Image (cartoon, rainbow, N blue to C red):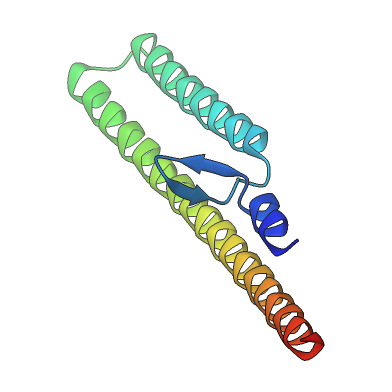
Length: 119
């Protein structure tokens, strides 16, 4: 009974290690696709805007430099947000696994005490 519950909780096994499954990997893929599409759109828009702008070479280089700095800042901000989200998710999953393991441990202890008392 206890082993079945542990197997259900830690259902995936990889290289001999038990792995707690992710809550919803499809959302992570959607987020990654959104970030990639956003970055591609920003880069394409900046490049087209600069190429078609009637500025001098030095002004174009300055605009391109500012655009790339802005893009870098946006990417770093987004990456920071995603890291925070993944850290939070990892902590939540760890807490759930610890709680469940504690519960299963107590059930096993209670079951063992009950069997010993019957003898």
